[in-house]
Every structure is written in structure tokens, then in C-alpha cells.
Amino acid sequence: MKKIKIIWRLIDGKAGHDKQSLALVENLKNQTSCKIFNINIQNLESPFVALIFKKYNLDKLLTKPDIAIGAGHKTHLYLLAIKRCFDAKIIVILKPSLPFKFFDLCVIPKHDGVKRKKNIINIQTALVNFNSSMKKKENVALFLIGGPSKHYYWNTKLILEKIKNISKQYEFKRLLLTTSRRTPVNFVNEFNNLKIKNVKLYEHKKIDNDWLDKNITKVKNVWVTNDSYSMLIEAIASGANTNILDLEIKKKSKLSEEIEKIKKNIRKKFPIPNEAKRVSEFIQKIWF
Image (cartoon, rainbow, N blue to C red; front, side):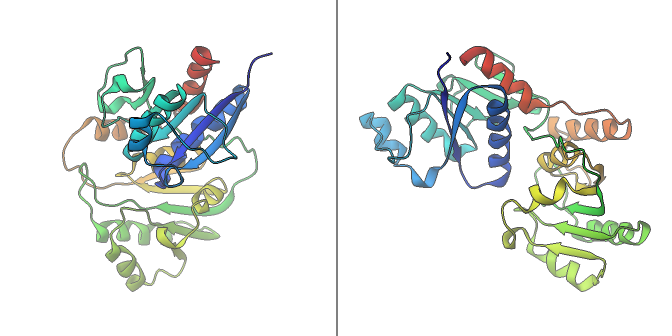
């Protein structure tokens, strides 16, 4: 009988990071014999102490890990400390700020331009959970609003004009809108000034972390600002009819080219790959 693997999923509090690591561990759980511990890095000891003295004082409820997974720069030193103290395999999602050789596996988006190596696996899209529910979608639409980025010019008035036109053009039972971490403060004020009665706005900082997860699988249509790659992939994976609220490209990059490619695939009804499942299958093959 195979030993049950203990996996620590490190959480840094950023929704985009946490969703990617969650998608990966949930796929691992579906495919393998493993037990998942979700650990907020704020509840762990300083990684510097652990790295120096090779010792981690664990909470009594925790079991030593075989594998640790983290997404985002804040998790990097914690992953290295866990590897040093427990000889665990460590997986980093997204391009790390530290040398790749420090990690057992780096899960890096293709648009970052990092070539595949023994410990690097490239992903075509963000890691997301695909909606497997066959329930009928509600006649509800959802707007996902990003914010300023190095790839696109942000234009609050342009986006609000698009939202206003959509609210008049389509007949939905409800129209929901949620902002994100990057959405400018003035967006909410200008939205309120427009008084679009049939669109209800939910501020990112005022809703529960699982608000989007609970709502996105129910809605029939989603519109996403094209500055947000991860939200775009999440919308498509939800099974909703996905459309894009276009912003002007600031400079051509591998990311903007990837988003343009996704836009074309949406129009042609091409499915996106389930990268969380593919990466979990790769991990299963090498470590389980």
C-alpha cells in the first residue's frame, strides 16, 4: 500500500496566488493518496531562523510534509526553509525571484519566456479549477474589473461606458460587478455617479474571499477587462460565455500576445487546456 503523501499548501493572502495553488492541490487530491494542510505563512516561524538552525517548531496539529507548494514571492523563503528542515520536495507556482535551482519544481507561465528544464514545467494558462457542474446557468451576468498594469493603459471612463452599454443592450435578471485588488478607488466613485440601476457593484475589499468562487459558476455571461490574465482564464473555466472589455495595449509583450490569442480562441469556441490537471499528473508521475 502506498504511503499517503503530506502536502503543505502555503497561503500568502493574495487571491490570485491562492487560487492557483488551490487548483493544483485539489487536482492532486482527486488523483492521488494525499492529505492537504493549508497554512497561512503568517502562522509559521521566521524562515530565516529555520534556514540557519535547520529547525522548525511545528503546531501540534501539523504533520511533517513530503511536498510543499507555494505561489508568490512571499512564500519562497518559507519553501526553502521547509526543504531544509524536512527534506520535502518544494513546488513554486509562477516565476520565482530566486534561482530556479533552489526549487524541485517551478510551474511557470509560458509567456514568461522561461525554457523548460528538468525542474521547470511551462503552463499555457493559469492554474484554475474547471467547473464540472452540469447545472443550468442563471440568467445573470458578471463584470470582472482589473486595474492599471504595465501591459495596458487603464481607462475608467472607457470601461464604465462599455458596462453602461452592455447593461442597456442585454436583458439579464441581474448584473453583478466586482472590483479587484488593482482597481483604482475612483472607479467606484465614478460608477456610483453614473447611477446604472441594473448593475450591482461589489467592492473587492468588502466581500468574502470566496465571493467570486460562489458566483462565477452560476452566471451565464462574464465580461473581463483584458488587463487581468488570471481572471480571464477563471471566467472561461467557469463555463460562462466569456467576453472581453478591451483596454489599449501599452506595449506588446508575451503576455499581451497570449491574451490576444485567447481572445481569438474565445471567438472560435476553442477550449483552454486544464493545466492544473496536467501539472498534478506530472507531479504524480515523478513523486507518487
